[in-house]
Image 1: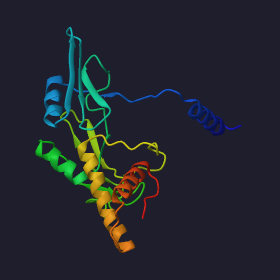
Image 2 (image 1 turned 180 degrees about the vertical axis):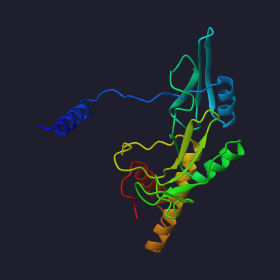
Image 3 (image 1 turned 30 degrees about the vertical axis):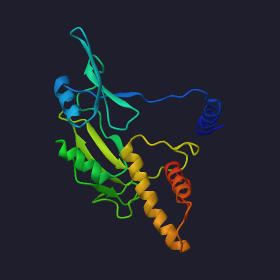
Image 4 (image 1 turned 120 degrees about the vertical axis):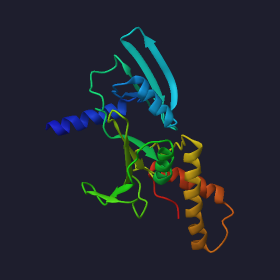
Length: 218
């Protein structure tokens, strides 16, 4: 059996045997000035969860981006990585233009929105014309050079989300999903040539399918 086959078989067994969740809690961001970093991330509107100091050699600060289940840590005595070593940390947004505008308003120097026509293709200025998920980006850095990449995702690839669960991490994410469902439902009513009295059921199915990557209703 080849090494790839062995690894594939092991991965399958691991998937089948999984009975505990492994939830990413925090990522360490190397910074040179803890107080400056604290001021920067606070200014972005991220939630300050903790600032623990133990003597002169250890300090941990935790921030959580709005709507994120995972957080960041920075401080003293946490990592040997050089300040600025954290590159292209993804921040998923449902409306990249709105997310960029809010960050700019909060003082971040965010790049213009760009998209990629295909895998490995060079970036193209502007938002993806078709508003495809995973294709539109914008980026910004903190003073140490740690970089963040905004990525617009409205519909997940199949298998990325449990098809039995529909979870929205914030009111803004829910509003965005409702607006997309409303627009799609308007096209649905045009196709059937009548008012759809069961629109709440249609909305629910559309929003759940969009999030899990299943085929969208028509």
